[in-house]
Length: 345
Image (cartoon, rainbow, N blue to C red):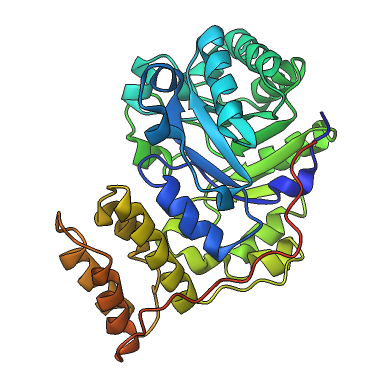
C-alpha cells in the first residue's frame, strides 16, 4: 500500500476528552484538508462497549483516523477490523500516553520499552485490515533517552510494514510527572525527528509537540513530511484559517460567523438525537477568541449552554452577543470542495 505523504501534511492531534466527533466536525468546518484523529479508544472498549457512541462520526470528517489503545495483538486486530468496517481512513496505535491509568492497562508510552510486542501488534493489525496502520510515539521513556534506541524502535516497526510515524518530540517520564507536565517539561528535540527522516527517507514522519502556528508548521515541513498541531487548535480553531490554501491548494477560507451558523445547524440535528447541548457547545467556546464580542460569546455559552435542558436557541442568543444585532435564524451554507481529497491507496 503506497501512502501519499501529502495526506499527513497537517493534522490535528488526538486529545483525550477533546477530539470527540463534535470538535472534529468544528475543525472540519475550519479546514477541509487537515487530517483528523479520534480520541484514543481502547481495544476492549470497542469490543465490549457502545460502538456507535465510541465510533460514530460525520461523513464530512474524512480523512479521519481511529486511534487505538491496547497491547494485545489479537484484540487490537479485531478492533482495527471494526474500525475499518466503521469507515475510518487510518488506524493509529497510541504509544505515547504516559498517564498512570494507561500504564496500568499496559499500553501507551510504556510500550516503547517492548518493541518486540509492539511489532507483533502492528503485524496483527496490518494483517487484519487494508487501511494504513500508523504509530504515534515519543522519543523515548524514562532513561531510554537515546537516539540509537529510537532509531532501532522505528526500524523494528518498519520491518513489519509500518510506514507512517507520528513522533511527539519529547520523551515521557512514566513516574513523577502528570500527563500535563509530560507535555511541557521534557525537552523538545525537534532535531531528532529531522534526523529520523534523514536516516529513513523512505518512511513518512509527522512531527508533533509544541507547534502553535502555521508558520512554525511550515518551518518544520522543510525537514519532515507532516506536522501535527494539538492544543493550539483547541484554544483557537481558527489557527487553521489559512491551512487549506497554504498547504493543500484548496480555495477555502472559513469565516467565524459562517462556521458558528453551521455548528448551530449541527447542534440542532444532534439535539434531536438526544445529545446534550453542552457536549457540543463546550468545544465552541473559543470560536471567537481574540475577536470583538468573543468574551461575551464565551461567557454566555458557559452560563447557559451547560443547563441540562438547554436548546439550540442558546447558541443563537450567544451569537447575538457577538454581532450585537438580532441574528436571522437561517444557516449559511458552507462552500463544498470541488474535488474531494484522495485517500491512501
